Every structure is written in C-alpha cells, then in structure tokens.
Length: 386
Image 1 (cartoon, one colour):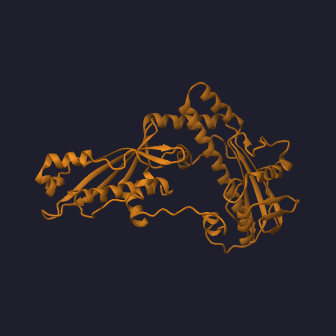
Image 2 (cartoon, rainbow, N blue to C red):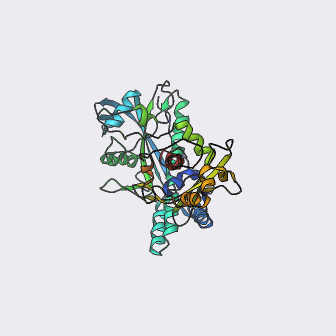
Image 3 (cartoon, rainbow, N blue to C red):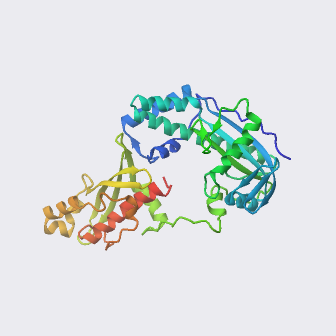
C-alpha cells in the first residue's frame, strides 16, 4: 500500500542550514580551504540575503509503475518515460512506484542575481548564485531523506534520485515530470517549464525516486553509478595514479591544506618529510606550494609552484648536493617549476624519470617529490575526495 505523502514542510528560512561543502563545490573551492576575509564576507552576505528574502518551495507526487518494457517506463496514468538508464535501474530493483519531486529557491533569487550583475557586482552575484543552487540541492536531499523514512515505515526502500539530463535520460522527459507535478499543484506551484526543458525560476530541479518492496539492495549511495551500467554506455577512463589510493588518502589528510582567495586563486600547501642518504639519515622537511585556477570545463591550471625548506628545519644542509655547492643547489630547488602553465590533470600522466630517495640531491628524486605533491592535489580536487 502506498504511504500517504502530504506536501513536505519546508524548514523555516531562518534555520535552513545548507552544508558548506555544497556551495563551495559550485564555487570551485575545496571544502577544507581557508577563505580570506573578502571571500568570508561574500559567503556570509549570500547566506544572510537568502535566509531573509528567498522563498524555497517543494512538492512531491507518488505514482504507480504499470510496466517496464525495454527502455520505456509506463506509469499508471498512461505517461510513458523513455530512459534506458532509469528503466534498467527501476527494473533491476523491482520498483513498483515512482515519486516525482520538485524543488526551487524561488523567483526572488533570480531577480536579485540579475540585479547584482546589472549593478556590476559580479562577486556577490556569483556567491548568491552558488548558494541558491546549493540550497536547492539541499532541499532535494532533505526530501529524499523524508521519503526514505516514510517508506521505510512501510517496509519499502527508496532508490536515490535520478533526473532528466543525467546519463541515459534525455531532457525531453522533463516536460512529463513537470506535467505530473502540475496536475496536482497547478494553482499553487511557482514553477514553469520552457520549451527547452529548462525550469523557471532557474534555481529549480525535478527528480524521480524509485520505490521498491525489496530491502536487500545494500548500500545505495552509488546505485546509479556502480550498480546500474548500460551495455552501450561509455564510461570515463579511470584515473591511474602512481601511488595507491590509501596512500594518497593519507597524504591528503596529513600533509595537504588549501587556501582560497578572492582573486579566484587556490593555493595548495604540501609538506614532505624525508632524510639524507648519508650523514646517518638526517631528517629533512620541505614545503611545496602550488597555485591553481579553476577553468570552466578543463579542471585546474597550475599557475605557480615553489619548494623551500620548512622554516627552522636545517636538515637540508646535510644533503650531499648542498654540501657540494650550497648556493647552486638552493638556486636549483627554487628555480625548478615543473608543469607550470599546464593543467593539473597532466600531473597524472607526467612521464618523468624518478627516484624514491628521501633526499632532493638529484633531479629524479626532486621529480619523485613533485609527482607526490601534484598527484595528491589532483586526487583531492578532482576525485571527490575532499
């Protein structure tokens, strides 16, 4: 029996807390980066404006699934959805019902963002835009949690959401999902849909959740990316690092930190500890800094790099290359700037001779350290490991 689903109550605007990781992702800022004073103020202003002026809204509609045949999902009201990915995922879980969810940040957000751009205040517009997108994502997540609790009480399982425009589901079906919502909320819903399938207000989303009587599906966090695979789908080539993931994880957690600046630059700092090959293995400590800028669809570009001994750590003076010629060695360390101007992703495929020696006396041992630094940064920024 289908649970009764009333319109979900929106949390009070003054108490709505959007996880920081959500809007930082849309700004291209690592969650752990320390923000400078200007970025902190922009974040606080966006949050304050949204809480005072936005009018978030959500609704849900549950509808039975009559049949799944090939790539077509036939709903009980005769609506047909065409999606090989959705059809396979629902059939695989023996889903018998679909819940359609709509969420929006409201029209006032779009108006304010447009006004900020018109007033030549792009930073404020960008931060409010990112916060509003994150708020809609949070509303959708909150609804998903509500659905999971509601159906779980009936001994049923809710699959993670899927939306038109995702892999294996054309945007054309956005109109059909919108029609399902509009049938019940025509008089009150603040959404409209354009011919292109885009929604207005712009900070809005539609999503579908499959419902099944099965409770043996295990963890569902990556259901659509790991459990459902289309035979004809092209999958992204996995990233092959020179180091095991568990090692990259440890370096990321223990040795890497980020700072973000109003200019859009991100600075990564990485500490490497080693030891000399002679002189009884004298401990060494070097600090690596990498300045990055996010580019729209290309990931991060390396703007500058530097390497220097950690302040007050004098072990480097025991290295053979330093003892042989201190000035030449330190100048070489300072002036060596691998991969500057290139994309961070090129660090993963960087073909260079390396040596795992703990010191930095030779270029191969230096490149080994730089490979550690750059691949750990790439792993943290590009592999959703922050």
